[in-house]
Length: 293
Image (cartoon, rainbow, N blue to C red; front, side, top):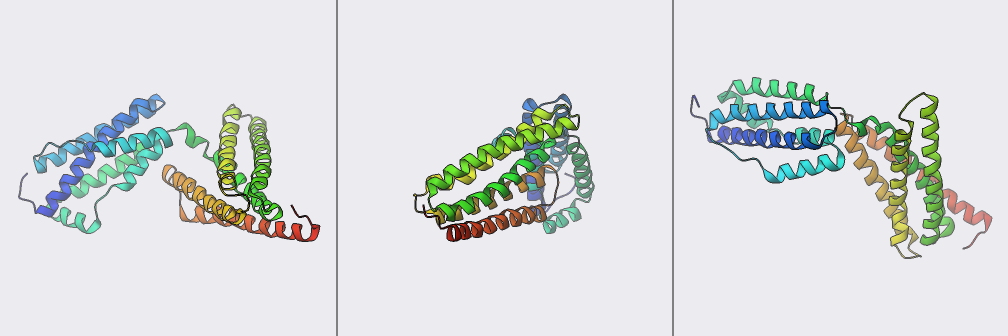
């Protein structure tokens, strides 16, 4: 170090130094199982960049550090389950130094501002180069997810008060859901084929899987609650809808750099709105048709 740093600035630099080393190892680990040679090369470049930044900060601290094993295990697992693009972008979003603390650091280490700027610009350009298959089919997954949420949520809400029996609702929902899964997947396949796309089968698979998983999650409360507890089952189903929308919207907002709040509110309002309307239809149908099960 060329000059003595305050304890607070030194602590910040140590934190940044360890983060750089840890992220270097994470990128290297993910590169081992990421698909596509270009993706592997990009991840290894990111790893080398982080290691170089680690060396820069080590010049100020004079300390050799070890990477954080817990953080490495966490993001490596996320990359395997949810994809490497989501994992690395989530990791980059989660890091950073509080602005007021960083301002103090730049006063003592002026070059840190340039280092940080160059690092962010270069990392962003490299992250944009990542090309993960599953993100190419987000549109297909949104189609399956959104259609299942709107259609099945409405059906289940209507069945709930028309039948007032959780097992009958589950059975009805399962029949409707599985039929709709095949219908939606085949429609996506035919649409892709008509557009001359060579990935029609893969596209319809993503749509069908997203639809089927949503069907299972929405029917689950009606299988878990007692036969007469159709109201708690309905409430739980609505909460699951909100959770699914929040989770998927957050995933796409991170992986594809899209706004979270507006997309979440739009999907949630549509799905819950349809469920409420169908709920009323179920009540009216039971009353005016005189059906009592």
